[in-house]
Each structure stands twice: as C-alpha cells, then as structure tokens.
Length: 336
Length: 99
Image (cartoon, rainbow over all chains, first blue to last red; front, side):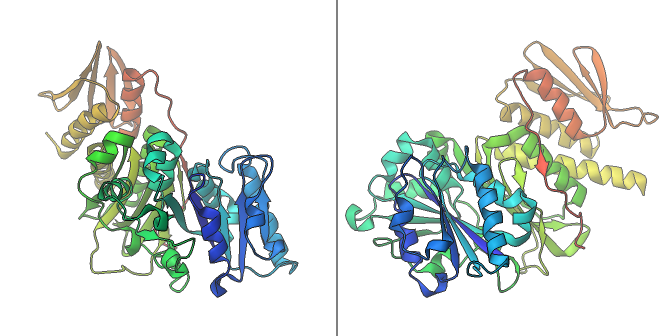
C-alpha cells in the first residue's frame, strides 16, 4: 500500500516550509506531492524543491470543494504513471491542502474512491499551527479549528519567533485535540519519524496502528466546547459489541450527526470475532471500511472509540450504542 | 420493565438533549415510554408479537410501526425537529467478521 499524508494548516502556518524540509530527507526520495493552491497564481509548488515530475499543483480552487474530483483524478493519473513506469515508483504521497481547506472531504476522497482506497492508505493528518498567530487564528477562522481538531499530529511552527508558548495556548490545543502529539518544527525542520511514528497505517505490520490514537482524551474539554463547540472524548465498553450493532451505530451516528461528527477512530471488540478486533475510522458521514487486526495490540480488549465532534453529546453516543447493542442481542436471542 | 425499555428511556432522554430540544421522557406501567416535547406526545411501546415489527410509535395519536430503534429515532426526530434533514449515511460495505 502507498501511504498518503495529508498536510494541512491555516494560511501562512508553515505547511510549504515543512514540506520543503521533508522532501530533502532521504526517506522521502520516493514521494509524490500534490499541492493545492488557492488563487489564480500558485507559488507554493515553486517553493518546494522536488522532482518536477512528482509534484503536481492543483490551482483551480480549494481542494476541499471545487476540485475535489480533481484530487481523485490526479491520484488515478499518478498511479497510472507509476504503473507504466513513466514516473518513479513512489511509496508515499503527500497532499498539501490549501490553507482554507476543510480536510474532511479530502480524507473522504481517500477513503471512498474505490481505486484509490485499494492502493493508497491514509497514513495520517498533520496540521501546522502558527505559534505566533495560532490563537488569534482560532478565534477568527473556524476552519483552522477544524484543521487542528482532525489532526493526527499537531506541528507548532514559528516557535523561534513566538518564544515560550503560553500555557493557555497549549491547553487550548489540548482541549481541541487531546490525542494528537504536539510537536515543534524549527524553520520547517522536524524529524520525519515524528510525523509517521504513530501513523494510522503501519507498513511493517500491515495494519492500522491503533495504539497511537487511542489514548484517552483529557477529561475536561470545557474550554474548547465553550469557545469552539469542538469536543473530543472516548467511548469505552467492556463487553463485546455485536457486528450488526456496530453497523447500525455508525449509520445512525452519520444520519443524525452528519458534519458535526468531525472524526471517529476506534478499536472494537466484536462479539463474533473475539480474537481479531475491528478498527474503524470515519470522517463526518464517510467511514472507511473497517480493518481487522491479526491480534489485539495489548492485553486491553475493551472497545475504545474516540470521537471528535461539534456538539454531539457523549451521553447520547453512549446511550445509542448501548440501546442498539441491546436490541440486536434481543433479536438474536429471539431468532436462536 | 425489560432491559430494552430501560435503554430506550435513556436513549430518548439523551436524544432530546442531543437535538437541543426541551422535553421529558417517562415510563408507563405497560412498559412503554412517553416522550413529551412542546405540543407533541409520542408513545413508544413494544409491538404486538404477531406483527413483524419491534416497536409501535404513536405520534400525536397517529400510530406507526418501527422495525428497529434506528427507525424509532428517525420517526421521533422527524416529529420533534421538522428542520432536521437526515444525512445520507455512506458506510462502505464491509464484512461483519474477518474474512
């Protein structure tokens, strides 16, 4: 599988600088890059030094809306050229979104396009945060909040200009996204392993690395809720969940929450598959096909589902899962 | 009261909160629950065993069967939250157990 890294972050937050540094690393020599620039004249792709054939600039609009189909088309074309040998057999794709992009539709494209999903797996979402202007940007630009909330990695940039980070800003980031490690880049320089070290997909084990993102979100998110309405929490269940109940649960979440379900990730103990847990991953109303791990990654066999939402109460999610599982259990008992 | 109505009671109470509606949920002596919200009274009870449904939902005297809690939720929300437009679910088909 080819890994796709989505690099997002608000305008001027240092995405292109970070990307430029990454592409100089030996480990990124076989990387295709898709850069989405918003505006009539794109510059970012000129600022990234890389093999010209493997850098594609999408300039007709914002990746998350006008040219979402262009992303799929571009990825198809990249795969075709890789297959016929006209470009390097890249093993990784980095998609740099425009600073105004909602990353969710981009993730959905990666997850739902049948050709893409069969060959390209989402390795993670990296969001750059401007340490100088980040707090003000959060106040002003709602999309920047969403970019931070869905990240698997938060990378603070311009830390050399910002000085010590105010604890209040750190708390705010933690409240927005408790599970993503908070990293710092000095003029774009960062250890690439930090960005991929806890990837969603581990090419060594050919499985989703669930341990990295199943850390319990902080207990209190009052600050984030008050300011942004974005909340993160984990649903933990001791008892196995019936497979049908899980399907109904996900569909009902989608139906009633829609765009308010920013992201969902989890490892689930399925009653019918006690030794092979299911890994689920969704963005808004689109869910990736669950993966089945070969074994439990630890002795902890509880189902753990992390949700990042905009105003979806934890109590409702817990009640929904409990009620649906109970109903499926009752129907199963009646039929047997 | 069986386990399912207890779950249903909690689910409906939480649903009102999730949908930002003010109302109440109470159980009845015959194992049903009644959701009261604004001018609406909704009774949710087990369907008779000779019907191929699990629930009977009575919204302001109009009775409709529901095959599952998913359908019950949909009916209740449609009645209480007219502006609600269900998001079309896009769950990729997947095997229910490892293959």
